[in-house]
Length: 520
Image (cartoon, rainbow, N blue to C red; front, side, top):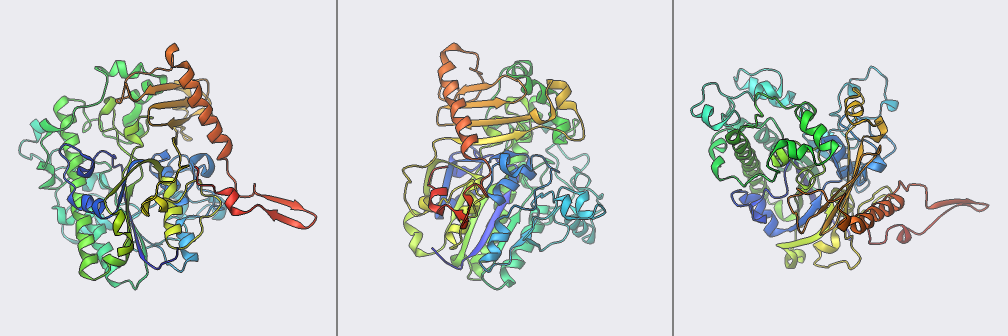
């Protein structure tokens, strides 16, 4: 297929898949995203392929597993030889724009050592043109606050400091009090304001990647969103009765139980484990999501007002999830589903797609599928590096008979600047890695360095509370899942040149159809 739609790729940050009213969350209110789901296709079993922010966005924007792109941590450089969605969109005549960030750590071999781009992991992925300089971090938004007269510090944490002596904050918990600015001046509103200007004035066709930080920490939100959800009514935490019991599940669980605040950059004074404070943090997180939802509603309304909605492909997703005090932890560097199960909604314009609007897809899909999907819908050809596959058949109302039955993801927990994980877990630097295979019932977690595996029966134990890896009744199933993981690793290794053979007649490349059967 070939078309010249506008493309709006919206990513939030740290958004759990279950936190949409469209999927039945008992208290979330996300009417604007729900409406997108009703006018598009909602993928119910969508997962990111790695974590944290930089690696997960690399997988999303390159279509590659972490085992192939190898940008494993925030700050780990992305090899410059890889292409990405922005560079591929340029081949189709688009000038890809960015508002926000891609968290790309640029290849230092391509730049002089003194290049300021090498002093941050929050670089702009090659091919994108930043529309709001400084929105890769907090500089642009903080400058805007100061121009409006707010007395704020120079970092996001300082700008997001809660209002002192806020009524009822002592009872509700430290994430209840709002910041000094109203919601119209929040970072989300700031970036969406710029997005509205962009779509209003940029000639079609355009491609805009709008990268919104919230609901990523710091966990704080302006009025009225800080009061929108009652902490007494938030869903119960999925966890074993005690932190000690959670730590006993696996040595890695014990390690992260001990150090997750430091590794996530969380303030221990704010992120207390008091029951009411934990509930309030959930309520605040939901409020942050509702603020994002309202701003997405503003952007969609602007597209409709200027007559561009009916010619714009809209994708909404996120980079990874958030534990949200399930298993007694916060963050995303865990092997549990809450850290990797994320939302995906694709809304295609035009009457030709009306028959599929509101469709719910239960098959396993991943972040690696986004790049080939967008390119396919616009008439492009996904590059050989892509590990994902186009979701266009689902968007057309079809069900590919040979689609994947498992989903895979990875987590690298090394720290190049510190040997803490190695010392605590007794492993080498390159053994600080986890790979997961999950199907509709079973989940197998493989560790390197001699650490034992983890195995869950998700039918009997949807909360992932019982590690069955040592249970003789599950030995056969665990072995079967380990074999699937081994087959995945063997078949999905980086493939750029592997389909080419040099002969006396020169290079011979196998047909593309042999490289991309509709099975991932």
